[in-house]
Image 1 (cartoon, helix red, strand yellow):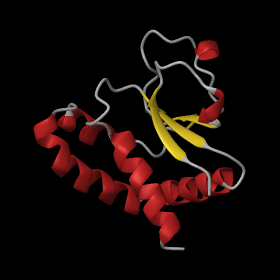
Image 2: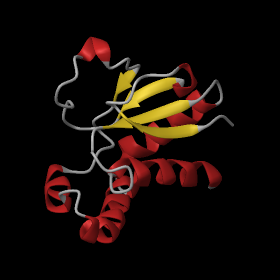
Image 3: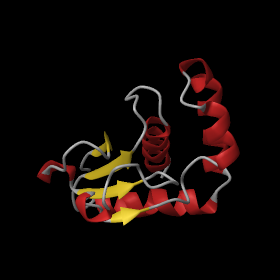
Length: 123
């Protein structure tokens, strides 16, 4: 299996990124669509608007956010399908999940990546 990476969408694209998927509901500020080097934009696997607003990228909310976001993913058939899609892509090469949040340690991409990998281990 190839590598499932996460990366800020503002970081330069690299060949080692492989297939690049934006996983934010909102388009990141200051980036032109043609400059993002995306292969796909998936809004269906993002936290709900209410959860995202409550979280506010605050470290003190991250643990509870993790639990609530995982519950949303578990009950979202599109997330399950997305995990399968990513698995098929990983058979061919690396996949990079792109996010716009400022913090590399407090964002939904960390949770989504781990959730996807757990889905594959269960198969």
